[in-house]
Image (cartoon, rainbow, N blue to C red):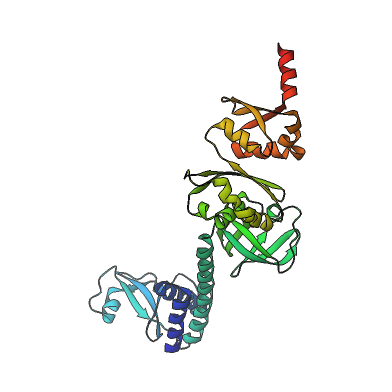
Length: 353
């Protein structure tokens, strides 16, 4: 150990954000283990290693308890011998007796090197984790670097993320070097470092895209109340304006549809229905079935279900292809929705009379 080594350690402390005290203490602990491994027959000996923080000078001490009768000379020392080292020693004190080996420097350097490398790795992992944990539930842009066994590996700059099969949009191709906007679902701190879970299917992706695209949402004037999504196919999003002079739906659509179109393009032509939220469940449910026009809504508050009547020519539109429209409307509003055409409802009423 020398002054150049100490300077190098202090540079690492600055660059990597490692605690200087923690680094030196960890090195000293490693030197204790290195001494016991190379210079003692067992690990029962109490050993202390000190490192001078200015010049790197190392001293190894065997620590012994001061006793009346010595039964184990590896761990114990008599009061008389202790007072030869320092007259102030009393019974039960601990005496430090220097046992630094002549060629300990090389062993010490190797042990210190291993500790420093390990600490650097841990510090880098911690820095990356702390950076990405602040981006949890946010959007990040990544670059596709490879595909393997259904997974898409994405470069996020300082870390690689995996876009799993369930987080990929159906029908979307992921080609090498493609730029993707991804939603960070979770950031985990594992033994191997930060693990970032990303998604293209999460409703949060749509929410964040609208927040980025629509200033009124970002400013809190327009509020996103709910999102129901079947990724790659269709999304319903309900919005509400906290300012009566601001049109929530108009803000989201943008001039000539530019704002919503930008989001549709990012989601590879996923259809987006922008719904006006209402505190009245009947009105909200009616709005949620857009583009179909609703004639009547009857609520069953106890079961949180709703019976909806539409014109005969609106039935298939209200239900949607394979039931998608009503399914998303139910998800959006939180109500079970049963749709019938006007003629079906009249026929049912006639049979019940």
